Length: 269
Ligand SMILES: C[S@@+](CC[C@H](N)C(=O)[O-])C[C@H]1O[C@@H](n2cnc3c(N)ncnc32)[C@H](O)[C@@H]1O
Image (cartoon, rainbow, N blue to C red):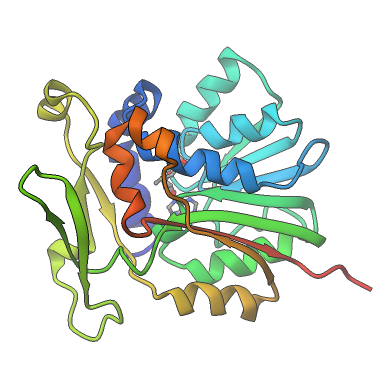
């Protein structure tokens, strides 16, 4: 599976993905990830920020609204076209490009103050290549903050255990280290927003997402080997209030679903 295949899957996912995100069906984003991600983001007002794997640009726009000059990149041209439509409707001086995070030769070394990425680094075929490119384009002292599915609970074999009422009570995981062969159905995950109304789910084509299983150690060590100093890790979960308001996200309180890293490129002497 290479970048070309990944782009094809995300181009196909784009129409329903965009509609679902805009309709608010991505409740984990709205109630768990966004509050944690933007809550721990340093002040970016006045900074030049790169959004890697920006999709249709929700986080890109939010970063621009926080006062940054933002450039969004994504490998899917359908996602980038949707992001550009938003920019035409309500300009925020955001620039978008259809390129892969592992080949950003269009950007000079040390041309960004910060980089962000929301739930995309786990979807990249060449994570290490992307990390090397991101540190290259960052200025010394700049940071990279990104969220991913938590690698310890997003494993090739994974079962949700439920009580009699159907509530999720535990997650069983296996083949974390990838020591057993990964089956074809584990390489392309099919899913749809679980909180979408039944009629929307019935009419939608499930997303087909190429999965690249990596251990926590691989995520961390790749950042360290590229030269990042890890500043902060966050395993977000729904607050009691959020879980009451949106019971669908209460399961994030039993085990970590997501992980946010922030690393800093050391300042050059
Ligand atoms: C789960 S979506 C997240 C999109 C967006 N950040 C958001 O929060 O809605 C993952 C995105 O990663 C993009 N992607 C996958 N591999 C990529 C790569 N090598 N370079 C840039 N983007 C990539 C996909 O096209 C897709 O838009």
